[in-house]
Length: 313
Image 1 (cartoon, rainbow, N blue to C red):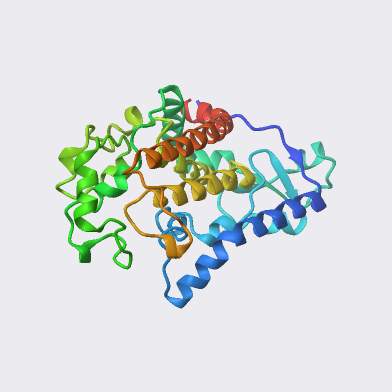
Image 2: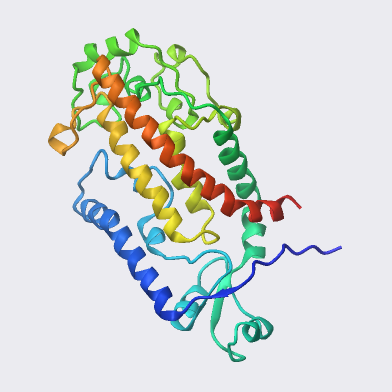
């Protein structure tokens, strides 16, 4: 028997309101994307502010596209543009009539059936990660040592950021790694460890164990809320995606301030995690980010619930 996923109640967005939201979104994105695009065009790099555009797969042009979210109906030029985008569909005459629109009107909304056909597994996995992470106790004792483990006993010319200097030098950096407990739970940080650093980590994260290990105190797990959000576009409103992006941006800045690199000339003073004061400052930031991420994780999970329910059937 053919099964079709349930359809969200449709809600018509006034054209002026939708345009205001789209304009505000573009302005919000441009603050981050335009400097990156200018640097890329000039062949310049930024060790902190390029990251969200180079590590994650969502490109600036994709991020600039505004999506109103599942159930929202756009009309006119906004609808016409989105009918050329993936996972949007035109409304039929019955749907148009239910919203008081004339037959043949140009109107577009999120295409849930096509979306699930393409992304059923991604939706299910995102739900597992979001709910599983939220259910675990937060850990706040890693002190950002994953970045230090990525350059442990590594020749200067092989550094991941070869144009940067190590704040404590190679020997001082290695000593910090050796003098501290290394207990990263996030595979996408652990996989960049140098060979000599791998056995020093108390955990052995893997892609297979990711769903069981991610926890809400982890900076990288909280940065990845942005990844899960954009992977669910256009089902989510772009405003929520940008909330996750901006949290991830601020976490990245703190993560690099606590790293072994000297970023003072880039406008990012060090958080010296090799000292008690630096460790305390790190944990304070980490707890604050975890609280913010918890709110966004819950919003993402709530948005996902209806989609995931359909995907499981």
